[in-house]
Image (tube, rainbow, N blue to C red):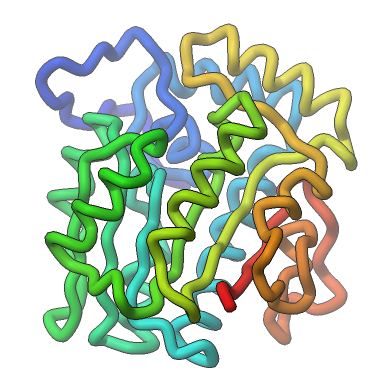
Length: 272
């Protein structure tokens, strides 16, 4: 097990008395980049909803399989990962550049803890490029401009990664609008990758745990129905098997027959 008894080095200006989503997620994934307050909220959450650890791992597994598909079969060489969170295993650039070393990856987040760690740890293959943009999801045009200025050729297909971030937009119409504005700035052949929490399998427990999360001072999170998540892909060519629970999206040969649904649904769609 990972020893998380020691806190990470604290960047200037960080309030270690308030929990933060990326650090709690890092704790659930077995990381050490978290503080006591994050572990306390994480343990309260897990006490009510033990499935959260499986969800965190399933989401990470989906990210790896989706990026492998995009960099491999789909031939994508540019990735825009918004709301990346803290670095862990199988980060987007690691998976993409393992398949295609020339892949160019831009991470976007606005959490100072994530920023400090990302600049130190998100180092990619020398054949490719890995950069970080400090920006907010609610500023899609700013994100596209910054990514295009530093790393990406916005005139060529881009994989837009939005994993466990859209639920932080409590208004569904706003979330769909932001996804649409981001896609509007990307050319044909670009792909959208989404994963977010739902409450269709163990809804009561998950709803109770989310209430604790939202009361803790962390950025609020809203669970959505799978059909609401599917609306993000309106107008896109959905990649099989469609919008499904994360473990069911193209499981590997060793996973077939061993997967079970969790309250995290995902999908990949191609812009015509």
